[in-house]
Length: 141
Image (cartoon, rainbow, N blue to C red; front, side):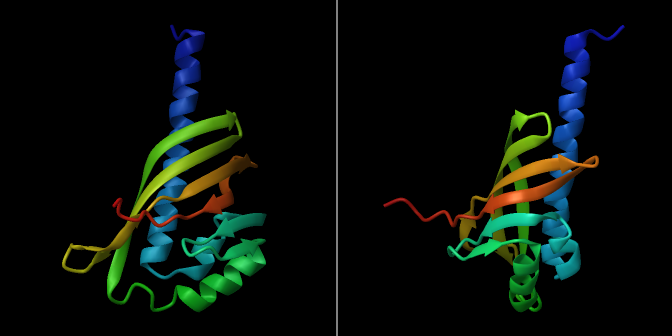
């Protein structure tokens, strides 16, 4: 017999796994330069700040930007993203801290790691990117 605590933990684990799948979809779309797949992961009114500080408001702006930067971006490299921490703000809203790294095709790191923060909202049973900030991690001096 499941206790209420076990049910809550199972639900939480299932939601974290669903969030991990969205982050995996971000990685897959970026690695394969799939603009439409990438932008379909965002809410219509999403906010995205790139690692270099460009602020984009709404899926249309994110799509326009992605069409200019993603095609050809993975010619000489690839990228990985790993969910580091999930903080549920409400059951249907989560702050997701991600570790990112670009890689040369020989497996060596390319540039500094990144530290995205994705605020995600669950709508109609689907987790969507809502407010995202990508930050380059500079070496400490």
